[in-house]
Image: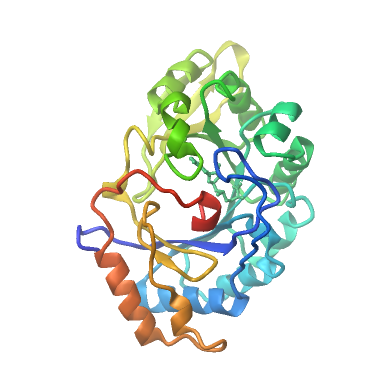
Length: 320
Ligand code: SAM
């Protein structure tokens, strides 16, 4: 429990800072640095947080978590720890096709896949070199592996992809995916351009209502998304659509998250500028849980009531 009475039980664990894409809103460009977390350290951290501190939800992220060579082994080890309610992963899907089924077998509960456009040329430009067809094949593989419900995350940007909202929703719903539209956040390269590129979630919903009848559905505690049952008009597909209004309606008062970066830094908020490193409590084989407890206590008590909404670090190094 933090100083504001929030129950912290969700961990975002970054496996690597490396990414095979360099999305314009996320990073400044392809970066040669490639720090990744030691697999045994990652497993020890989750064992400690789940056994001593009742963390129940773990999301593996990055960078691109599928670039960690031991990602499947890490999922398998976390799954055999016992106390976790879910182990999820966020990916750009480029390297997913060959891995989806093994991840499912290892114990991955669900998957979120980033998909900002359905146009190959736009995808290549936005991601600085990505291949749309690979991500689409990755999504199909996740569906076939029953990583349900597969969630598609769309970061909406004015003048970039806001003309595709209905198409993206229909494409995902036709395949049984949940489609979530995210407001862009003032992080990394977006600090300068957010004013012109932010499309408020209310506007996104207004546009989607032209193609779908939307009825709000209740969300579990700690979930930042507002979800809707969507019924396609004029014979369109139906399913679940959501928005995450991180910029226009910050969900700090409901935030239950703690982050650990690929360098072992502990961050209590997406907008933290620095944190102590749990690597200091790891000797290569064992985690000094008492030392780690002290760092955790300090981080959780410093978790701000409201994040200060500006972050110079890139999402790729925080763990989105
Ligand atoms: N490589 C994986 C991926 O692409 O999903 C995981 C890491 S990525 C940093 C995690 C999420 O952060 C993605 O859904 C991405 O779209 C989102 N993201 C990155 N920068 C963002 C920003 N400035 N505003 C909103 N979302 C952002």
